[in-house]
Image 1 (tube, rainbow, N blue to C red):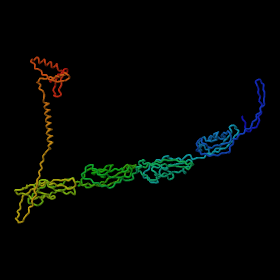
Image 2 (image 1 turned 180 degrees about the vertical axis):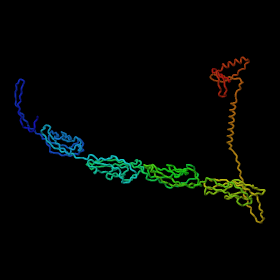
Image 3 (image 1 turned 60 degrees about the vertical axis):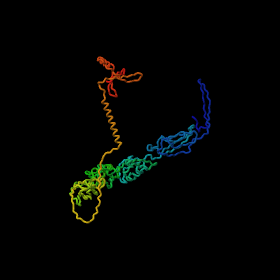
Image 4 (image 1 turned 30 degrees about the horizontal axis):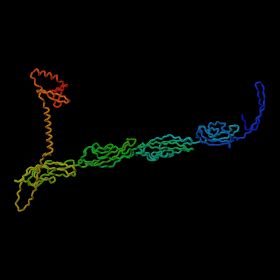
Length: 589
């Protein structure tokens, strides 16, 4: 069984008896002396060892190492209580935990006493012990619990600053709910600085404006993350996501400035006048419906969505010079409730521009006057009017003014001296004058014609003879021009026309000759024969000799029927002929 250190130096005496099968035996005394061996004794430098670990230590983590002096030393735990949570490596003395050190599940792990024995592997009686005190410190392993984990709410964009929003309800198992800290994580807000935390309450921090393209790109959703932290060691935290949808509110009325337009009175249906530039600051911007109040009898039309103004009916400057329209602007699709649209009114003035579109009117259009040849008064005054304002009428004699005896001074017709003395120019007694009345407004100019019939009675006045010398002013002769119109083409045109006519007549004559030329049926048909000698084909005509006997004629007719076996038409002349397919002989029909 081996010897211990205490048996060193002792002598053991033994009697050994040897017996054979015959019963004979012998004995011998044996003395064994145990000699002392010099070796290092197993020993710990300290009797106890204390160590602290956190309760969140995962399994198989090194806790502490015990070290004993000696040779061939091995280690083992010899505690009387079960120690399933700890183990020791026999050769190194390293103590490890075998389970997760969770004080909530294993409250007895708060303080554990382990007795570790070190012994000599070759001399088990050479051993030493040490007490290891392992203290498990409680750790903050779980963060606060918040409900709800995600906050989803919807508020109008008119929510004032400081309004409290739905907030999370948080509690910590270890420290409770009174020792929690709330804050909004930096960089988590979109747009930034939209919300703030007042203790545990989520509040609006800035104006929530939906009237921007940036918010429209985010679908009008504000985002933030609330960070809730406890005061444990180490501190644990929990995050709560916040999604706030801001609903649009129709806050502003459409706006429109007073506008003036000018339209010519002669424009037609569908003429574009201009656009009503209405604006709306609610998103979507400028989403406006336009309408004309009292448009039942209006001569204008406005695009419902475009705000473009068009002419619907005829305009007349003489009847109405301007139109005052009241345009209603109503926004739509600017909020959740489409019935809460806000209308506004806009005054529009359309001035009709006077356009010269009507000719002057003479009342009556026909005048008749009887005058004496010596009269110096106004022959007649034309009563003509013009509807267009600011237009002056111009009068001009355009017809019937024989010898230039009449002239116009404004609307008054005057006459020059008549001549009724023979020989010389003898003026007619009746003048039928055409007076053109032209307006002087803007272009285009319009005119009308009035007819004046003047009957002149020749009259002479006796003038006493005086010695007064009168100077005769030579009368400027009147030159009459008469234009005769005739057609005088260029010489090349006559030549081309003549040649074209001659070619046309020649073509018609040739066509008529081709149609009318046919061979008389009574003539003797002539056969066409082909000569194929020496590879050259040649057509020739053979004349039949007149038969002298009647019986011979019938024989020849029978031979003709037997000689030709086909019938065809000549492509040039159009005549038909008989042919023999074997010999190539032909005969006109």
